[in-house]
Length: 194
Image 1 (tube, rainbow, N blue to C red):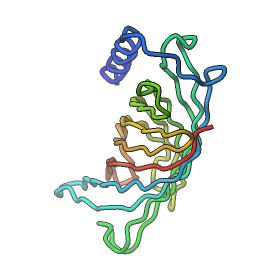
Image 2: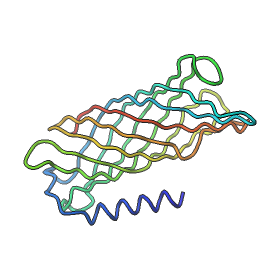
Image 3: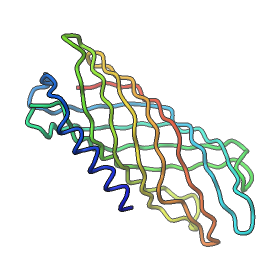
């Protein structure tokens, strides 16, 4: 956990001392995004006295993000936070047998550098941060809170954006039999910035 926070502090430090880029052009240095996406995940489950088992899951996202300029518009460095809902589904392949689904709600907290390419309407926005997830349990054996990391980039053209990223949970899903499941994988989002 300490290494995670040190890594995040290092990224913030590098980003704030980066070469000065032009103003983002956003009035009052704030923006919102809404999006839908696809987030396939790999669930790696560790059973007592057994090998790890891996399942491929399909995930579908819907979410909102709010960005605030943290450098008084001198640099396009933003703090983003929002809300996201993911519906994960494993059709008949779950290691425990049968179809399986999981709904989680997460709050991402990201550091984003929104760089405009020249005088164009195109921005590239790499990001790094953490997320806090709360699962809607399908039974009463799972913990419902998870913490993880996210990284990726968005490409914006006027009001539209396409994002590609990766996330990984640091804390696993656990049940009363001490079975641990770790999740993570890529995500692709498409949405609007306003």
